[in-house]
Image (cartoon, rainbow, N blue to C red; front, top):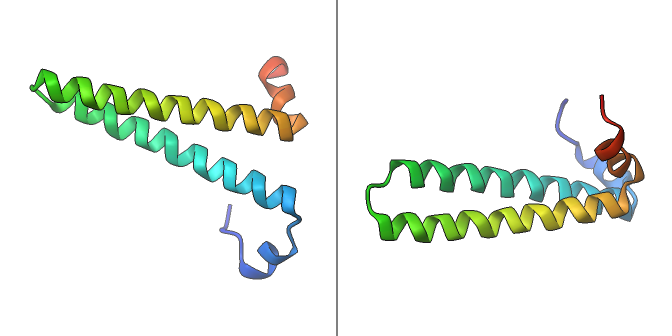
Length: 85
């Protein structure tokens, strides 16, 4: 899907803009989880691994918060959690 152009972005209502922000933030949180996990797996330092694991788990909390937001604001998104194929 092509990126949103400026004209289309200006036509979006506030809910659409907020949903877009939340979805992009969720993508970024999931990316951060992956990065922390890669660093944990690559490190031999147990103290560093504990710190990175803590940070990874904080990102998981952030992702969960964003999913809850999306479920509350987007009824189709919410429905797919119980009725997906």
